[in-house]
Amino acid sequence: MGVLSRADIELADVVVVARHGERLRFASVVERDVAASRAVVEAVLAEGKPVYGLNTELGAGRDIVVSAERIEEFQRRTIRNSSGGLGAPLSFEESRAVIYARLVGFTRGGAGVTSELAAQYLELLNRDVYPFIPRTGSVGAADLTHLAAVAAVAIGAGRALVDGAVVSGAAALAAVSLPPVTLRAHEGLAALSGNSYSVGVGALVVSDLASVVNAADRVVALSLAAVGAHSTGGNLSPFSLEVQSAHRSPEQAASAARVRAFLPDDSAASTQDPLSFRTAPQVHAVLASAVAASAASIRLELNSRTENPLVDVDAGRMISGGNFQVLALALSFESLRLALAHVAAASERRLAKLSALQAPLRRSGEARVPGLLSYSASSLVAEVRQLANPVSLNTTSLSEDVEDVSSNAAVALQLLERSAAITRTVLAIEAVTAAELAAGADIGESLRAVVDTTTRALDAELTAGELIAAVELELYG
Image 1 (tube, rainbow, N blue to C red):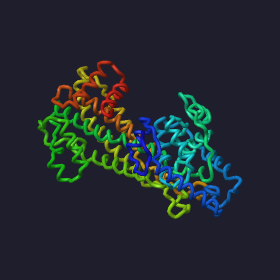
Image 2 (tube, rainbow, N blue to C red):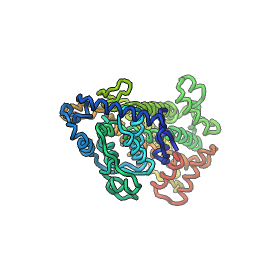
Image 3 (cartoon, one colour):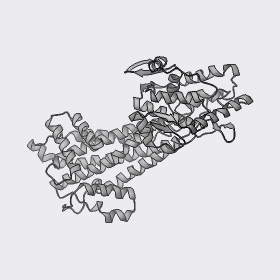
Image 4 (cartoon, helix red, strand yellow):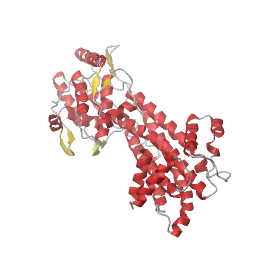
């Protein structure tokens, strides 16, 4: 069982909770922190001074005071008004990532929620409640529509999924013997005040990208073996320790070292190969650096107090702020898409060289890997290049021009998910083509596994899609 304490949360913690269903409990210090934060909210409320979202309305209505007798109704109205998400629901693991990220936010002391609401989110995870969270709706200034879908279920409203069927939030809670909670003053806004979709699901996506970096090096090594077996290519000089140490990039050196480790020797006669082969470490290093930068940005957001207004326990007050602006996170997703596009484009260019070497096998009828897989790769690379265009500037002014800038972090993340999927597939297409050409080459065990997977899939007469799926499983696990 995991313990939520004051310790920093890592991306791996999100993965364990979201994908592996780890159960959680609060450390006693967190229970005290949540109670202390809530005490500040109650004290400020008793003072009667206007505070955004506590006793005033939201957005364009920020100067409209909510009377004491309407406070509880205002919380429900806040959730209902924010439930504007559209589209297919997030997956079960994505839903858990969103809930977990917001729960972590509750424990940092800036939200001011009651112990009851924090415990409710904990139990949503521990009892596997699956809110129906529509995919579309956030503009990246707190993931309001995503979090409204969670909060609605927590109070017994909204929709949830049980055994694949859409049911009411109340029915979903009843199915696990969990009573709904009643939102108190400020909790409607506090439940929504975080970029928990971009952060939580972002942690899953970025964690997966580490496997793409390693797989890309593996595929390059297999392609080098393939061209070495059928031409005078496959020169390993660009991957040498001497060349890599001259540049002093640790990510580049690591990429080159992995490629060298996959291959037994350098028997190529060619002076040098095309750029898509010999600059692979430089390209892959950019992706590795972008993954690390995005992970750092997610880690920062996970462990920060991003609520507005921020509950400051030390000062004993609630302060308007803008920590929900996650432009740095959005830009990290943008950079990743651009890096992935370069990796995919280089892969497609290597594939073109492999396809040319495969031509004699096609003419003789010996080739079993479809030559027109290269057409699919070309189509996918066209798409991934389009996806690399920035989206963070494509924002508009909302709420009567009060919310006049935003980051589009959620959209940037969704485009990143597609870019990552495309890049994985393009690399797999390169891998199956190289595997057929390298079948008789002197290669290490790791590369031989790709060849064997390809051979088994071809022997089973799988469709092109099934063939690529089998190799993707081998490459990425």
